[in-house]
Length: 94
Image (tube, rainbow, N blue to C red; front, side, top):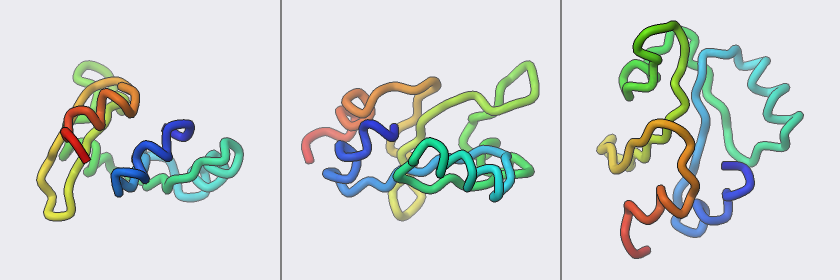
């Protein structure tokens, strides 16, 4: 996502990452990789659970992408890490 940030910002989409790591670990990781988007701490997995991103058989987060509009409507969801072109195509023309 870091390398495709411009594709998102051109569509007025603000990406962010979510996982159970602490705020401190997120800050160090984001600085190390130069991430141009925020990372949100979800220590009890409430966000991950709400959006179906928990692994079904073993504890942990399954990498996934969800696009959610400002009123909370889920516009797109996909397991894995599809590229920006695939994700943004689902929204149609800008």
